[in-house]
Amino acid sequence: MIARGLMHLHTRASKDAELTFEEYVAFARREGLAFLLFAEHRHRMTGEEVRETAAHCDALSTGDLLLVPGQEQQTDAPGKLHVLALGVREPLAVTDPVGAVREIRERGGLAVFAHPARYDRDRYEAILAEVDGIEGWNMRYDGRVGVRESNRALLAERPSVLALAGVDAHRREDLEDSRAPRLVVELDRLDEPSLLAALRAGAFRVECAGETLELRRRAAAFRRWHAGAMRLAFRGLRGIHRRLARLGIRLPERWVRAIRRRF
Image (cartoon, rainbow, N blue to C red; front, side, top):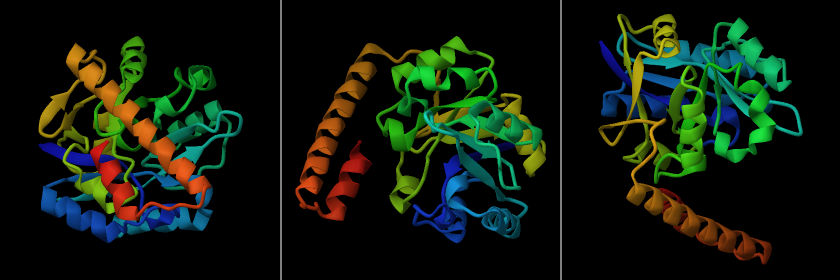
Protein backbone atom coordinates (compact mmCIF):
# COMPACT_ATOMS: atom_id res chain seq x y z
CA MET A 1 0.00 0.00 0.00
CA ILE A 2 1.03 3.62 -0.53
CA ALA A 3 0.67 5.71 2.61
CA ARG A 4 1.06 9.49 2.87
CA GLY A 5 1.84 11.33 6.05
CA LEU A 6 3.54 14.23 7.80
CA MET A 7 6.73 14.35 9.88
CA HIS A 8 7.90 16.64 12.70
CA LEU A 9 4.66 17.66 14.36
CA HIS A 10 4.13 19.43 17.70
CA THR A 11 1.09 19.57 19.96
CA ARG A 12 0.37 21.56 23.08
CA ALA A 13 2.49 19.00 24.92
CA SER A 14 5.54 20.79 23.45
CA LYS A 15 4.53 23.93 25.39
CA ASP A 16 5.00 26.22 22.36
CA ALA A 17 2.38 24.85 19.94
CA GLU A 18 -1.36 25.47 19.72
CA LEU A 19 -2.50 22.23 18.08
CA THR A 20 -4.11 19.22 19.76
CA PHE A 21 -3.85 15.57 18.76
CA GLU A 22 -7.54 15.63 17.91
CA GLU A 23 -7.03 18.53 15.49
CA TYR A 24 -4.28 16.56 13.75
CA VAL A 25 -6.58 13.57 13.42
CA ALA A 26 -9.35 15.69 11.90
CA PHE A 27 -6.90 17.25 9.45
CA ALA A 28 -5.42 13.88 8.48
CA ARG A 29 -8.85 12.48 7.72
CA ARG A 30 -9.77 15.49 5.58
CA GLU A 31 -6.53 15.19 3.62
CA GLY A 32 -6.51 11.40 3.30
CA LEU A 33 -3.30 10.97 5.28
CA ALA A 34 -2.40 7.59 6.76
CA PHE A 35 0.23 8.50 9.37
CA LEU A 36 1.50 11.36 11.54
CA LEU A 37 5.01 11.45 13.03
CA PHE A 38 5.22 13.57 16.18
CA ALA A 39 8.36 15.06 17.75
CA GLU A 40 7.49 16.84 21.00
CA HIS A 41 10.13 19.01 22.71
CA ARG A 42 11.78 16.71 25.24
CA HIS A 43 13.42 19.54 27.22
CA ARG A 44 10.00 21.06 27.92
CA MET A 45 8.34 17.86 29.11
CA THR A 46 8.51 15.67 32.16
CA GLY A 47 9.06 11.95 31.77
CA GLU A 48 5.43 11.32 32.63
CA GLU A 49 4.27 13.76 29.96
CA VAL A 50 6.36 11.90 27.37
CA ARG A 51 4.62 8.65 28.29
CA GLU A 52 1.21 10.34 28.26
CA THR A 53 1.70 11.63 24.71
CA ALA A 54 2.67 8.14 23.56
CA ALA A 55 -0.48 6.72 25.17
CA HIS A 56 -2.55 9.46 23.52
CA CYS A 57 -1.14 8.53 20.11
CA ASP A 58 -2.04 4.88 20.70
CA ALA A 59 -5.56 5.75 21.81
CA LEU A 60 -6.26 7.82 18.68
CA SER A 61 -4.66 5.44 16.17
CA THR A 62 -7.04 3.35 14.08
CA GLY A 63 -6.75 0.83 11.29
CA ASP A 64 -6.45 3.55 8.67
CA LEU A 65 -4.62 6.28 10.61
CA LEU A 66 -1.41 5.80 12.59
CA LEU A 67 -0.12 8.33 15.13
CA VAL A 68 3.55 7.72 15.98
CA PRO A 69 4.91 9.38 19.13
CA GLY A 70 8.36 10.93 19.17
CA GLN A 71 10.60 13.49 20.81
CA GLU A 72 12.81 16.34 19.72
CA GLN A 73 15.90 16.12 21.91
CA GLN A 74 17.94 19.25 22.52
CA THR A 75 21.59 18.40 23.11
CA ASP A 76 24.08 20.16 25.34
CA ALA A 77 25.65 23.56 24.71
CA PRO A 78 27.47 24.98 22.86
CA GLY A 79 25.80 23.17 20.00
CA LYS A 80 22.27 22.76 21.37
CA LEU A 81 21.50 20.66 18.33
CA HIS A 82 18.02 19.20 17.88
CA VAL A 83 17.60 15.55 16.96
CA LEU A 84 14.24 13.94 16.24
CA ALA A 85 13.58 10.62 17.95
CA LEU A 86 10.78 9.17 15.84
CA GLY A 87 9.01 6.25 17.49
CA VAL A 88 10.73 6.60 20.89
CA ARG A 89 8.15 6.28 23.66
CA GLU A 90 10.25 6.46 26.80
CA PRO A 91 11.79 9.80 27.88
CA LEU A 92 15.26 10.37 26.48
CA ALA A 93 17.94 11.06 29.07
CA VAL A 94 21.21 11.57 27.20
CA THR A 95 21.94 15.13 26.00
CA ASP A 96 25.46 14.67 24.63
CA PRO A 97 25.01 14.99 20.83
CA VAL A 98 26.52 11.67 19.76
CA GLY A 99 25.23 9.92 22.87
CA ALA A 100 21.71 11.21 22.25
CA VAL A 101 21.68 9.81 18.73
CA ARG A 102 22.93 6.46 19.97
CA GLU A 103 20.29 6.35 22.70
CA ILE A 104 17.57 6.98 20.11
CA ARG A 105 18.80 4.13 17.94
CA GLU A 106 19.22 1.79 20.92
CA ARG A 107 15.58 2.41 21.81
CA GLY A 108 14.52 1.40 18.29
CA GLY A 109 13.74 4.91 17.10
CA LEU A 110 14.70 6.73 13.93
CA ALA A 111 17.30 9.44 14.64
CA VAL A 112 16.91 12.45 12.36
CA PHE A 113 19.07 15.57 12.54
CA ALA A 114 16.60 18.47 12.52
CA HIS A 115 16.83 21.75 10.56
CA PRO A 116 20.61 21.76 9.81
CA ALA A 117 20.46 25.28 8.32
CA ARG A 118 19.99 26.57 11.86
CA TYR A 119 23.58 25.64 12.81
CA ASP A 120 27.15 26.14 11.67
CA ARG A 121 28.64 23.01 10.13
CA ASP A 122 31.37 22.59 12.76
CA ARG A 123 28.71 22.24 15.47
CA TYR A 124 27.15 19.09 14.02
CA GLU A 125 29.91 17.38 12.06
CA ALA A 126 30.33 14.68 14.73
CA ILE A 127 26.74 13.41 14.53
CA LEU A 128 26.51 13.11 10.74
CA ALA A 129 28.01 9.63 10.83
CA GLU A 130 25.57 8.56 13.56
CA VAL A 131 22.11 9.72 12.45
CA ASP A 132 19.72 7.72 10.28
CA GLY A 133 18.50 10.78 8.43
CA ILE A 134 18.76 14.51 7.89
CA GLU A 135 15.80 16.87 7.67
CA GLY A 136 16.74 18.34 4.31
CA TRP A 137 13.72 20.62 4.31
CA ASN A 138 12.12 22.02 7.44
CA MET A 139 9.28 24.43 6.61
CA ARG A 140 9.66 26.38 9.84
CA TYR A 141 13.36 27.20 9.39
CA ASP A 142 13.87 26.88 5.63
CA GLY A 143 10.60 28.54 4.61
CA ARG A 144 8.00 27.47 2.10
CA VAL A 145 10.06 28.60 -0.90
CA GLY A 146 11.96 25.33 -1.04
CA VAL A 147 15.06 23.42 -0.05
CA ARG A 148 18.20 25.34 0.77
CA GLU A 149 21.12 24.61 -1.54
CA SER A 150 23.36 24.12 1.52
CA ASN A 151 21.03 21.33 2.67
CA ARG A 152 21.08 19.74 -0.79
CA ALA A 153 24.88 19.79 -0.76
CA LEU A 154 24.98 18.25 2.72
CA LEU A 155 22.69 15.42 1.64
CA ALA A 156 24.59 14.89 -1.61
CA GLU A 157 27.76 14.33 0.44
CA ARG A 158 26.06 11.52 2.34
CA PRO A 159 24.02 9.37 -0.06
CA SER A 160 23.55 6.65 2.58
CA VAL A 161 21.77 9.00 4.99
CA LEU A 162 17.99 9.36 4.60
CA ALA A 163 16.84 12.64 3.04
CA LEU A 164 13.67 13.62 4.89
CA ALA A 165 11.37 16.64 5.04
CA GLY A 166 9.37 17.93 7.99
CA VAL A 167 6.63 20.46 8.59
CA ASP A 168 7.74 21.41 12.12
CA ALA A 169 4.10 22.28 12.70
CA HIS A 170 3.24 24.48 15.68
CA ARG A 171 0.21 26.39 14.38
CA ARG A 172 -2.91 25.53 12.41
CA GLU A 173 -1.74 27.41 9.33
CA ASP A 174 1.41 25.24 9.24
CA LEU A 175 -0.79 22.24 8.51
CA GLU A 176 -2.98 24.02 5.99
CA ASP A 177 -0.08 25.28 3.87
CA SER A 178 -0.42 23.72 0.42
CA ARG A 179 3.35 23.26 0.15
CA ALA A 180 3.74 21.30 3.40
CA PRO A 181 5.91 18.28 2.49
CA ARG A 182 4.40 14.80 2.63
CA LEU A 183 6.28 11.57 3.06
CA VAL A 184 4.97 8.88 0.71
CA VAL A 185 5.85 5.40 1.97
CA GLU A 186 5.44 1.93 0.54
CA LEU A 187 4.03 -0.36 3.25
CA ASP A 188 2.80 -3.92 3.56
CA ARG A 189 0.74 -2.96 6.61
CA LEU A 190 0.01 0.22 8.51
CA ASP A 191 1.63 -0.14 11.91
CA GLU A 192 4.49 1.55 13.71
CA PRO A 193 7.20 -1.13 13.21
CA SER A 194 6.40 -1.39 9.49
CA LEU A 195 6.42 2.38 8.99
CA LEU A 196 9.73 2.92 10.81
CA ALA A 197 11.28 -0.04 8.98
CA ALA A 198 10.17 1.32 5.58
CA LEU A 199 11.56 4.76 6.37
CA ARG A 200 14.82 3.26 7.62
CA ALA A 201 15.09 1.25 4.40
CA GLY A 202 14.53 4.36 2.27
CA ALA A 203 11.25 3.04 0.82
CA PHE A 204 9.70 6.49 0.57
CA ARG A 205 9.68 9.70 -1.42
CA VAL A 206 8.97 13.33 -0.55
CA GLU A 207 6.06 15.14 -2.19
CA CYS A 208 5.42 18.88 -2.32
CA ALA A 209 2.13 20.13 -3.79
CA GLY A 210 1.63 16.74 -5.43
CA GLU A 211 5.05 16.61 -7.11
CA THR A 212 8.00 14.44 -6.11
CA LEU A 213 10.80 16.50 -4.59
CA GLU A 214 14.43 15.46 -4.95
CA LEU A 215 16.24 16.80 -1.90
CA ARG A 216 19.75 15.94 -3.06
CA ARG A 217 19.58 17.32 -6.59
CA ARG A 218 20.56 20.93 -7.19
CA ALA A 219 17.61 23.13 -8.17
CA ALA A 220 17.37 24.93 -11.51
CA ALA A 221 19.01 28.36 -11.68
CA PHE A 222 15.73 30.28 -11.67
CA ARG A 223 14.45 28.37 -8.62
CA ARG A 224 17.71 29.05 -6.79
CA TRP A 225 17.47 32.77 -7.60
CA HIS A 226 13.80 32.93 -6.58
CA ALA A 227 14.39 31.11 -3.29
CA GLY A 228 17.34 33.34 -2.48
CA ALA A 229 15.36 36.50 -3.19
CA MET A 230 12.43 35.31 -1.08
CA ARG A 231 14.67 34.46 1.87
CA LEU A 232 16.44 37.82 1.59
CA ALA A 233 13.08 39.61 1.67
CA PHE A 234 11.95 37.55 4.65
CA ARG A 235 15.15 38.29 6.59
CA GLY A 236 14.58 41.99 5.95
CA LEU A 237 10.99 41.85 7.16
CA ARG A 238 11.99 39.81 10.19
CA GLY A 239 14.68 42.36 11.03
CA ILE A 240 12.14 45.18 10.86
CA HIS A 241 9.76 43.19 13.07
CA ARG A 242 12.46 42.64 15.70
CA ARG A 243 13.54 46.29 15.71
CA LEU A 244 9.95 47.41 16.16
CA ALA A 245 9.54 44.90 19.00
CA ARG A 246 12.57 46.36 20.78
CA LEU A 247 10.88 49.76 20.54
CA GLY A 248 7.75 48.31 22.07
CA ILE A 249 5.79 48.33 18.82
CA ARG A 250 3.87 45.11 18.19
CA LEU A 251 2.53 44.33 14.74
CA PRO A 252 -0.91 42.70 14.57
CA GLU A 253 -0.56 38.93 14.84
CA ARG A 254 -2.57 38.44 11.64
CA TRP A 255 0.08 40.45 9.74
CA VAL A 256 2.89 38.34 11.19
CA ARG A 257 1.10 35.13 10.31
CA ALA A 258 0.34 36.35 6.79
CA ILE A 259 4.05 37.01 6.23
CA ARG A 260 4.95 33.57 7.53
CA ARG A 261 2.45 31.96 5.17
CA ARG A 262 3.99 33.82 2.23
CA PHE A 263 7.60 32.90 2.95
